[in-house]
Image (cartoon, rainbow over all chains, first blue to last red; front, side):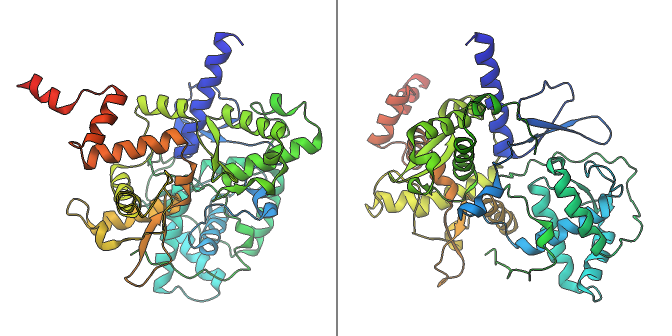
Length: 221
Length: 221
């Protein structure tokens, strides 16, 4: 193998190690392409997210067949519910891909959440919603701007296939419609590149959110 | 997600459909399962030729197979890739998260190992670290709580089953992904930090080509 090919392989391996240890990376649009990493261009075109992709037949979906569970997501059902709600709020043009979608607000998420439970909002709802938004932000399924109370779909959603999207389209039809978004920041909002570790990369499946009861809360201390 | 995969296809294209499935299943299991998987469970790990393909796939993304207890396999970062990223200053964990993780490793592994309760070089341990042992004046309660949450989500620590004295933690399944060299580095670093004047610390410094602190002090004088 030529020196150049060896160097390119090492460079690829380093980029892959980075996205595996820190989750999808936001880089300058001039960054050269890396084999196997999809580029999710940010809404204003100022940056690009590098998101790992795998061949069909590989990934988390295989684990279930093998009976070897991935690293557990805390409050999996609540987290999946909130992801489903954010898809409803942020994927406004459902004839196209989900990424990058539109900005949704916490008020919209709270409203759909209460509608989904079929009852007025309860004080504990907000804690569950915020916890889920943080978890999904840390794993790049969402970009959650806590200060502004605004949420976008995360770069990982670029890996959703046409089949995934058609399932999600169905799911959105079953959820209450969100009220119109009232934004506090002028769009397009640029996100804080929050370097939270995100190795827990199991994609929560929003399609199970409606049928499974919430898991019991786990005390932190 | 895609029919073609720029990184892995050149490796996989010569395999039969069946061999490809076995290799991808084994690759997914060692990469994404929370715990090491049994060799007997997967043809892609049992069969030496197929396992070599799994190793080649991992190498492309900066990873390597790690043998656990002689019967199980998992994947971790390849030593050369980890060394290069460390030299570049790559660090996805915040300083608080690392501090809390180190406290758990000291109480759950390093101390029991020094007492002869734990043998071998594994970072697996059933000795729980209590919240009291994690209290330090340098990290606030809120910071510690959030760090514990992130470390748990990352699989670096986990709740121990022993809840008699409130919640307590043990090292998480991700620690089993350390290669033998990485396990030794971690052990060395803990010794250098905990007992820098001990003869064993001196031996570590000599092995790593780091000047002895006593000599440094003399030179300073």
